Length: 179
Image (cartoon, rainbow, N blue to C red):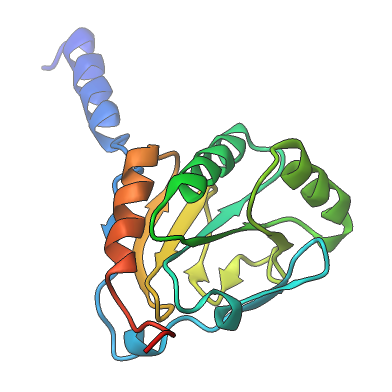
């Protein structure tokens, strides 16, 4: 018979092992549709368009977040730091997964954090099914190559170095509009 102490220790080890880091990048496998890129259109809180057409030609980081989540705020700032320093220049955007009635919160979020990239409201905030697939945890960062194909997906908080590395790799993939 297993003692209570051994059982508790075993369950603790199993629970700890199951709580592995979610921050490791998961490269997106190539699909027959990868060369066409992800097609998306959002309206930024300032009224401008954020779409696959406006981001193509540069590596792009799309951050899905909520305004009330501290991890989302941290990732928004980290992404901003990377985008401001990244060479070659990259695109970034935040997509808020909250009801449209909270657009004022999204505007305040971008303004308070002094973000250098657009903040948009997700039309599909309720069911979390986006053009990028299901986004059920925030923050989630999706890295697109120059043609708009997804190359990497980060779930949770990741370092600036990881973001930088993924954007650098994405900058080398896909077509260039300058051809």
